[in-house]
Amino acid sequence: MSCCDDPTDPKRVDPRDVVREQVHYGDLVRDLFTDNPEKVLLKLLNESNSYLRELAALRAHFPSVRLRAIELLDSKSIEVLQQIKDKEDGSEFALAAKNRLEILADHRGFFDKLLK
Image 1 (cartoon, one colour):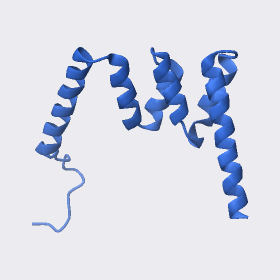
Image 2 (cartoon, one colour):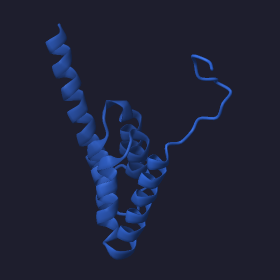
Image 3 (cartoon, one colour):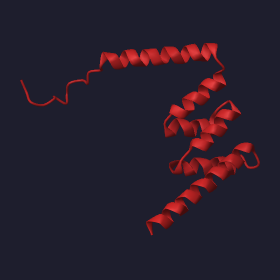
């Protein structure tokens, strides 16, 4: 018996995690079939990571999902917000991105003042 894990051994997946993900996937598919897909996507957006939020802000099919994704972007996504603002000038998405950029700039300025 050794005291440490062998790094060459494949990682074992906890069967409970597999079951949990299967249930989550089943619930998602059920919701997509039986509920309003736009509502389902808005719910998922709140649980998503930064990458998926950025993707939704750039390409989501439903305008409400794109707008909500833009609202949820943080200071790490400034380049994406700037891209939306520049490429879609005059659209509601560009306006939302511009507003979000201003809010993030205000927050950054506020924290800079606090730290000085």
